[in-house]
Length: 88
View (cartoon, rainbow, N blue to C red):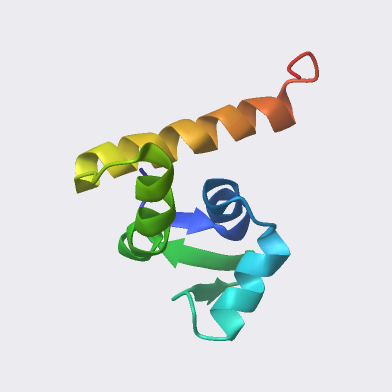
């Protein structure tokens, strides 16, 4: 898992749009860093905000390593769908 995720990547993990994530950052619900290319969300914050939703869907508690793997899988799956015209 990268040190920072984009709002699009966190949106994939949470099942929300990048715009919703930006709103969450502006409202103080999610800690984000504003960069010239847009907002980025630190790794620890991604784990914090995704833990409840991911654990609910998984039906069990996950350690940080398992949660990171799951986040990485969601991001890679969505990235493949958005960059590969033959996928989905």
